[in-house]
Amino acid sequence: MSQQEPLFPSMDEMLEAQEFAGRPALDLVYEIQQLYLENDKPWVIGFSGGKDSTTVLSLIYVALTHLEPAQRHKHIYVISSDTLVETPLVVDMVNSSLEAINNNARELSLPMSGHVVYPEWDDTFWVNLLGKGYPAPTQSFRWCTERMKIDPVSAFIKDKIARFGEVIVVLGARSQESSSRAQVIAKHKIEGSSLSRHTSLPGAFTYMPIEDWSSDDVWMYLLGAPTPWGGDHFELFELYKDSNAGECPLVIDTKTPSCGNSRFGCWTCTVVTKDRAIEGLIESGEVWLQKLKDFRNTLYATTDPAVKNTYRNFKRRTGKVQYARGSIDNDDTTEVKTIPGPYLLRYRKQWLEELLRIEKSLNDEGHTIQLVREEELHEIRREWMFDPNEPDWSDSLPGIYQGVYGKDLDWVEHDAGAFSETDARLVAELSEQHEVPAELVMKLLELELSMDGLSRRKGLFGKIESLLKNDWGSLEDIRASKAKAIHSSVLKDQLKQQLSAQTEDLYLKSVYDEQLKSLSEEYERLKP
Image (cartoon, rainbow, N blue to C red; front, side, top):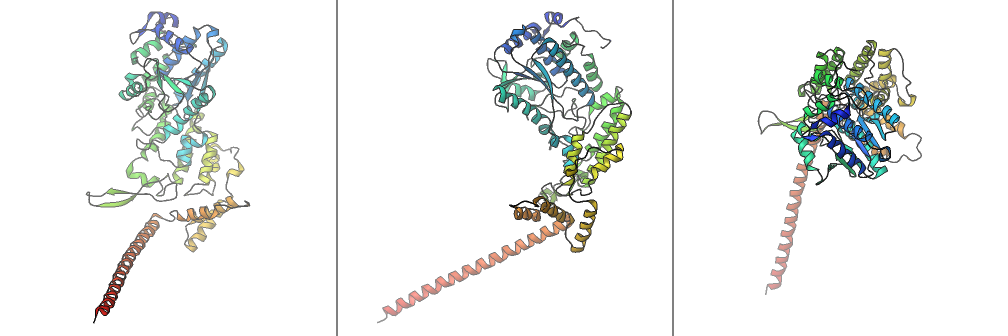
């Protein structure tokens, strides 16, 4: 409990006395109750742990507790999206709130439950970045939002739609937060209703009870009375004050603004130049977060266009080099440039080891934290073993983990490939002797092994052909091969043109000869 005291001793007293956005608080509570009683559509409350979603959750909790037990006829789901790279202090606060809500709901027999949704293990931030080599997110390539936030939340909502037909999603969105958010809210509003149509999920409606509130209204509500499930919101207020941050909303579709402007969100976010939220927390005394900030800055540095080719493969994950034309000195002169692919495996290994060392050191210092989950390590290991460009036959990850923690995890034996580091060295030696790219030989051997034992090896030749069509060897070799292919293509085109011209000449000569013959015959007939 904080040393500070709320303005009112109880929530009921505050609601009776206060107005928010020019509207009596009890009037809004009544609106929530009537909307709840209106139909059987279950509610899904988006809870991010920030001030706006906490206010909405509190209002609905109060409205529900003030209904008669017989009127509480449908369930309310409180969902929080954990990307597994959220700001640690926010994660602790969210989990604490959900635990308190679940405990109180059981004691009071409220049809309400808190749930945390996560991305799939093969689609987490670390599996994509360290495992698959995806580059750190940027404004132009923000691959993280949909995979880590939208998909898990959408899956939860779709499950409820499948069970109940329709649902109402309750959000803490406010029009005053941004003009873009105000436009989205207004665009989907249902005339004469408090509800809006969901922008992408059929069968889902959205309800935003505090859309007209100001930030001052929100803080007046939160600090005006104790929380209905126990405790107060002064810790949340201090967190905001220390970090200088805003709330990262629960993202439910691609039109919801994501956390690219120093809001509380992922500590790994490289979409922004500086993470002012983390910086503010460090300045306020949470100095242990400096290690996370430094690691985040390491990733951010790789997004500089000047160093992309240093950290990233010249081939895409498709196994091919992709080209783009860019101007050199003027609009009339261009050069062919390659579009960088995934991070090189050696950097991914280096960053995983560094991440594990940070995790261990923080735990040794007394901070209970898990930066990368065991399930993610298994997925990363599989991605490395069967990487499309740099297959890790040496199976490096268990050794990296053992080197940091001095112990082994329960590694799944069949996750490892059938080949070893010794095999990789042998393939490299033979490939050099026969001037064949080692990676191509390794992928062909992996393909053969994957088809071994099948009674029908359907599609084998197609897969072999697909591998052979990929780009292999150094970038210089690939460019030389491409130039040779282009030269050969040009020669073929020239030959075709020559043959076409000769054919046309032969055709014209044939027509001329036929006409001459015809005229000669006609002349012979007409002679006396």
